[in-house]
Each structure stands twice: as C-alpha cells, then as structure tokens.
Length: 291
View 1 (spheres, one colour):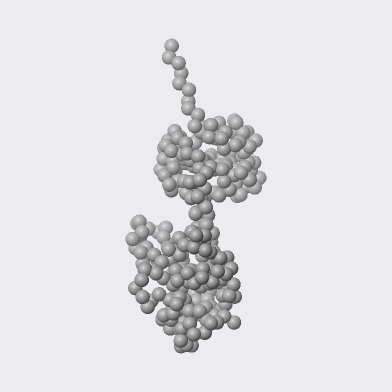
View 2 (cartoon, one colour; view 1 turned 180 degrees about the vertical axis):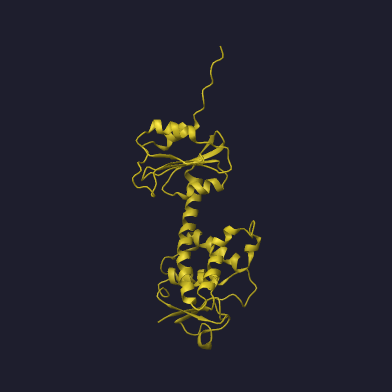
C-alpha cells in the first residue's frame, strides 16, 4: 500500500499537494495519508528512499520546498511531478497546460508565502470565508484529527478547482463570443452560453450590464452592476409584453432581471433569441416632434 506523508496540522500547501497526488495520478489516488512532525519523515527513514512513500511539504525531499528560498511551494513542485508522470486526468504537454490548475496553485503559493497580507483590504471579514480561515477553524474543532482536516480540505479544493475551470472558461467565452453594446448606463456585453459565470466575470471586467442567454435551457440573465444607476423596470415590462409565456422576475433592487432558474424548475424559459433581447435593450426612445 502506498502512503503520502505530510506534516501535522496540514496547511493549504500541504493539503493541496496531497490533493494533486490523489486526484490527478493513478498510482497515488488510493494511497493512505500519514502525518509527521514538520520537517520529519515517516519512521525517520531517508526521504524518497521508498518508492511506495511520498513526502510532501515535509522531509526536505523532492516535493518539499523548505530546503530552498525559491519562490515556490510543495504544491507547485507536486504539480510539476504530476505532469511529468502524465497519468490520470493531467496528461498535459506544456502547450496544453491546464490554466485553471496553474492559476489555482499560484494562489496556493502566494498564501504559503503569506502574501494574503497584501490583498486589498486584508482585514475584511469576507476573507474568513476562504480556505485558509476554514482550515484554521477546523484545526480548532478537530485538533486531534488531521486526517479529517485533510479529507475535508480536499473536498473544498474539488469545488475550488471546478470554480477556477468555470472562471477560465468564462474569460474565454467573453473574449471570443461576447457581443459588446452600449446601454443607457454604460457599456454592456451579451453572450449565448451555458456558463453562468460569464455574468459575474463581465461585471468584474467593468461592464455595467451583462446579458446571458442559455442556449440549452432558454433561460435569460440580465444583471446590472450594483453600484450603477441602472433600473431594469422598463425592460421587465417590455419583455413581459414581448414574451408573456416566459417567467420573468425583477429583483427588488431593480438591477437583476431573471428568466428561469434551477431554483424554480417550474419557471418557463424565454423563446426570445439573444438578438431580440439586444434589440430591446438597445432601442432608443423616440423623441417627440416639436410642432
């Protein structure tokens, strides 16, 4: 039986390294996980001397980084090792690199070098919803159960990885397929895609109005950035008139106009095409003739 070894009270770097081995290789996916004092090895053996044992973030071996002052971490070294193996899900040639995984592990490296203190507004409460804070909480709740902490941490990393994939995909979708337009309140972008992350990404990129049409389900999302002066009431009325069979919902903020939702499977999707939606959203009010 193979064993992956890391240190007690595993941090983001240690758990990410274990996660990479178990999720992206065939030879280590069923391995047990053991814990040792930081810097030590399993049973005091020479690191990397047993092919059935892999030390990560401890032991000063090939998947540790504490023996150097390089800007790296155990997870970055583990990702390189996983790619060299070419097993499992990561059969990656350099030109086909998994951008989501690279970016994710870059964040792990920043965290391992304490760079989160340089994040914008670093004392803000919303950072305490992140993995670093969650791990700190688990260590207080389960101080004697490092295995549980590692298992829970890997489940969170599964979700984070999926989110990173969605994010990279959304960036690509917007750059390749987004249709820019001018709204009443500033620049907007419209797109037909099954990726709902494009709406948030568009707002983060500075678009005042983001429009998404789901080509499979027919659902429509129209969202204005919260800080804008946008009021979507007029479009709510126009769309209800244009497509009365569809389920339209105007949020109380009047900055979100939604059609259909996985939260409400009884809602009816819109039959309107993206081009029709854009025509309504960009129509200019006709001026009255002065007699």
